[in-house]
Image (cartoon, rainbow, N blue to C red; front, top):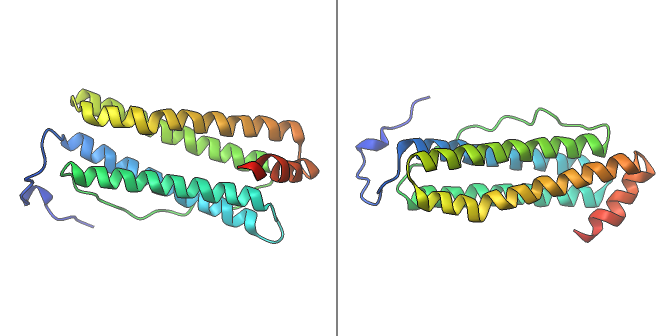
Amino acid sequence: MSFPNFKALDDFIRQNYADQVENALNAQIMFELKASHAYMSLAAYYMRPDVALENVAKWFMKQSDEEREHATGFIEYQNRRGGRVILRDIDASEKQEFTSLVEAFQFALDLEKGNNEGLLRLHEIASQNKDKDFCILLEDKYLEAQTKSIEEIGRYVTKLKRLGKGLGEDFFDKEILESC
């Protein structure tokens, strides 16, 4: 599949916005959308009547919404800077069913760590291209929030390991996630 040559278009608002930053941001947009898709898959799994952990499902759906909001924010930024947004297909999540909440939240933790790595790469590329405006946006809006998400999910994994399967997972669903 080929894309049109956007460089031929009049980029009248583009200023000091490097191609490397534009390309890295498109990659991050796709990662955010893929994470949203994976979280939605997790939510759908925990909504099933044979799994029935409603608060877990709501929590994963909320995470899906947040990742999609991040992608939307990056899309708006890309357009504001005169970049071109290129969206690609999203593959199905490699994991569709889980044997425990520990496994599901470990999967979520790995997603968040991957997302953080992408944001750090994006920051590095923006820094190398002296794009201070974008570095500040990443630091203020995304990187700190990402660190907090990793910590939160890591704590959930710790608690779930302590609680165990079965009734421990029910307790986690009712008592811990109900407040979220």
